[in-house]
Amino acid sequence: MNVFGVDIGGSGIKGAPVDLERGGLTQERHKVLTPHPSTPDAVAEGVAAVVENFGWSGPVGITFPGVVTSGVTRTAANVDKGWVDVDASKLLGDRLGGLPVTVLNDADAAGVAEMTFGAGRGRKGTVILLTFGTGIGSALFIDGRLVPNTELGHLELHGHDAEKHASTKVKEDEGLSWHHWTRRVQKYLAHVEMLFSPELFIIGGGVSRKADKFLPLIEGIRAEIVPAELKNNAGIVGAAMAAAGR
Image (cartoon, rainbow, N blue to C red; front, side, top):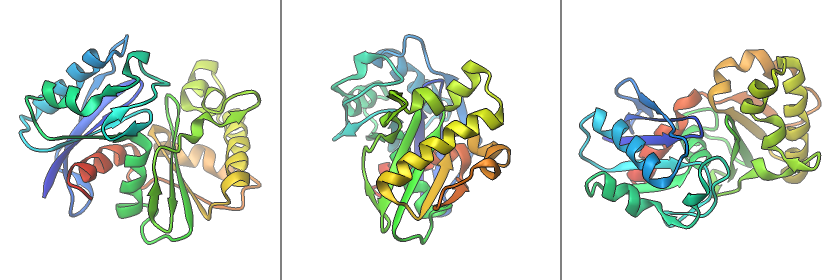
């Protein structure tokens, strides 16, 4: 069974059809840049460009970088504030010509995909997936069950949102070395571990492709730390799973 998944990020909107039996993309993903300003209508156009690139006409799952409840976007940390309290399912569904649309938090989508097909498969206890990108997303699982919309990137660290201190974007903007940035990530992981005592951290987002550059440098964390196996496609896969009711 194939379903379409779209992952809206602070810098890009990417998507592809997904094979839900194996948790992989059936075609190479298509990506467009996230518009600036990233207003709801402008982003909807980007989503449509991705979906229409494949001539898709079935259900579509779409991730959003913020809290989503019943298809309504409640926060907008890394996109235009006009997204707050928007019925995203209706907006995006209308723009896609009435296709069935399911909208969910981006890190939650990535986490569900990793727990089903990737690094969290078969793991019990407390598992936390963290996506490092424009911000820091999180997905919290207790014995395989998702606790949605945790948004742990907004925990306070050194007087600021943690994602303003340790995201991949901050690494790039400040020109931080892998060593310097990893020290920040380590402090963030220690803070999250103190609060939740997970057995496993899964590190996702685009930076997971370069896990060998920083994961071996992390010290003093009791939990196991592994890179996301689906890498930066996890959000697309999880979005498609949500659209299929999985």
